[in-house]
Length: 75
Image (cartoon, rainbow, N blue to C red):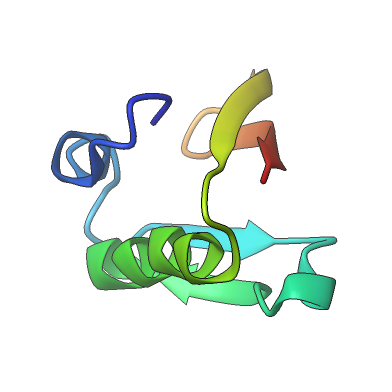
Protein backbone atom coordinates (compact mmCIF):
# COMPACT_ATOMS: atom_id res chain seq x y z
CA UNK A 1 0.00 0.00 0.00
CA UNK A 2 2.75 2.43 0.94
CA UNK A 3 4.55 1.72 -2.35
CA UNK A 4 1.36 2.37 -4.35
CA UNK A 5 1.69 -1.08 -5.95
CA UNK A 6 -1.99 -1.79 -6.50
CA UNK A 7 -1.54 -5.22 -8.08
CA UNK A 8 0.32 -6.46 -4.99
CA UNK A 9 -2.07 -4.69 -2.61
CA UNK A 10 -5.10 -6.38 -4.21
CA UNK A 11 -3.67 -9.81 -3.37
CA UNK A 12 -4.45 -9.29 0.34
CA UNK A 13 -8.15 -8.55 -0.31
CA UNK A 14 -10.67 -11.39 -0.43
CA UNK A 15 -12.79 -11.45 -3.61
CA UNK A 16 -15.88 -10.43 -1.58
CA UNK A 17 -14.13 -7.72 0.48
CA UNK A 18 -16.03 -4.60 1.52
CA UNK A 19 -14.10 -1.41 2.19
CA UNK A 20 -15.92 1.53 3.75
CA UNK A 21 -14.36 4.97 3.45
CA UNK A 22 -15.26 7.67 5.94
CA UNK A 23 -14.39 11.38 6.15
CA UNK A 24 -13.15 11.74 2.57
CA UNK A 25 -16.45 12.96 1.11
CA UNK A 26 -14.99 16.45 0.62
CA UNK A 27 -12.68 15.14 -2.10
CA UNK A 28 -15.19 12.82 -3.74
CA UNK A 29 -14.19 9.57 -2.06
CA UNK A 30 -16.72 7.79 0.07
CA UNK A 31 -19.11 4.96 0.55
CA UNK A 32 -18.60 1.25 0.16
CA UNK A 33 -16.26 -0.41 -2.31
CA UNK A 34 -16.98 -4.11 -2.91
CA UNK A 35 -14.74 -6.83 -4.27
CA UNK A 36 -11.32 -6.44 -5.81
CA UNK A 37 -12.62 -4.22 -8.61
CA UNK A 38 -14.22 -1.99 -5.99
CA UNK A 39 -10.92 -1.79 -4.14
CA UNK A 40 -9.21 -0.91 -7.43
CA UNK A 41 -11.73 1.94 -7.87
CA UNK A 42 -11.16 3.03 -4.26
CA UNK A 43 -7.44 3.50 -4.87
CA UNK A 44 -8.12 5.33 -8.12
CA UNK A 45 -10.37 7.98 -6.58
CA UNK A 46 -7.72 9.60 -4.32
CA UNK A 47 -5.25 9.38 -7.21
CA UNK A 48 -7.69 11.43 -9.30
CA UNK A 49 -8.19 13.99 -6.51
CA UNK A 50 -4.53 14.43 -5.49
CA UNK A 51 -1.30 14.75 -7.45
CA UNK A 52 0.55 12.80 -4.74
CA UNK A 53 -0.64 10.93 -1.70
CA UNK A 54 0.29 8.25 0.78
CA UNK A 55 -1.50 5.80 3.04
CA UNK A 56 -0.43 4.92 6.57
CA UNK A 57 -1.95 2.09 8.62
CA UNK A 58 -2.83 3.32 12.10
CA UNK A 59 -4.56 0.30 13.64
CA UNK A 60 -5.61 -3.28 12.82
CA UNK A 61 -8.41 -5.07 14.67
CA UNK A 62 -8.90 -8.79 14.04
CA UNK A 63 -12.40 -9.95 14.99
CA UNK A 64 -12.22 -13.47 13.59
CA UNK A 65 -13.91 -13.46 10.20
CA UNK A 66 -13.30 -9.73 9.67
CA UNK A 67 -10.38 -7.38 9.85
CA UNK A 68 -10.81 -3.74 10.74
CA UNK A 69 -8.16 -1.36 9.46
CA UNK A 70 -7.84 2.28 10.41
CA UNK A 71 -5.56 4.23 8.20
CA UNK A 72 -4.80 7.76 7.16
CA UNK A 73 -4.40 9.20 3.70
CA UNK A 74 -2.36 12.35 3.23
CA UNK A 75 -2.51 14.10 -0.11
